[in-house]
Structure formats: structure tokens, C-alpha cells
Length: 130
Image (cartoon, rainbow, N blue to C red; front, side, top):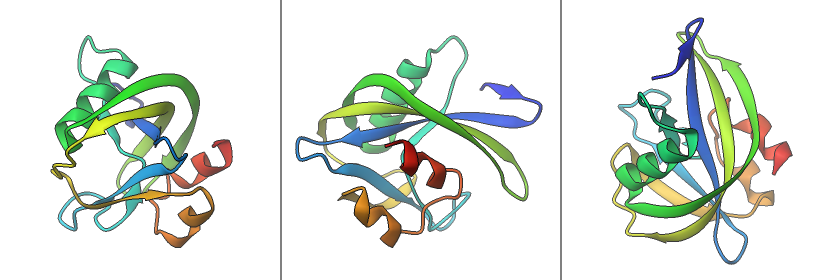
């Protein structure tokens, strides 16, 4: 796990399907930030690239395959008990069976409809980069 000065680095995917809609998922209530929607991803493991991390996390959490593209941007956010450096990559959706592990729901949404979801605070600034 990549941690600098108690800031947890998380890689997330802005995953778009053929219709241009983006994939978001809602965290299970018993998880950190439970009930919040997010652009999914996870923490980097030792000797793993950011792209490998994103592909592994999406496969583990949704049985999803994506083509990881360019870095979109990043945001640093300070929650009450931890801080996060969220690094977003554009991703092209390939396939999924949507086996939910850490989440209890998912949606494919337009950029305009993102305002209708209670996103995790660290994810909100990424909307302006999309």
C-alpha cells in the first residue's frame, strides 16, 4: 500500500461504456464511507503499477475487465479519520458479471446525472475533469 504522510493513495477508474455512460458503485453500509457512491478502484499493492492495481481491483470487486487509458487527474481529500489521494484514470469498459463484494449497488450514469447521487467527497472534484 502506498502511504505518504498518512495519506492513502487510491487509484480509481472513470469507466465509460459504448454509450458514454460512467460506472459508479455504492459502498456497503458496513464499509468505510458506507452508502456513498464512488468511482471504483483501490489501494496499490507492493510492486504493482497504478494500471495493474486498477485492473486487479475492478476484477476482484466486480469481475470487470477494462482497458486502462490515460491519467485523468487527482484529488486530495481529508476525511475525519484519514486522508486520501485519489488518482483517476480514464477506462474503457470491456465486460463484467458485476459480482458485488464491497458494494451493494451500481449504476451506469451520464455526467449530468452524477449530481443525483451522494458521491464520496474525494470523488466530487473529479467530475469537473471528466
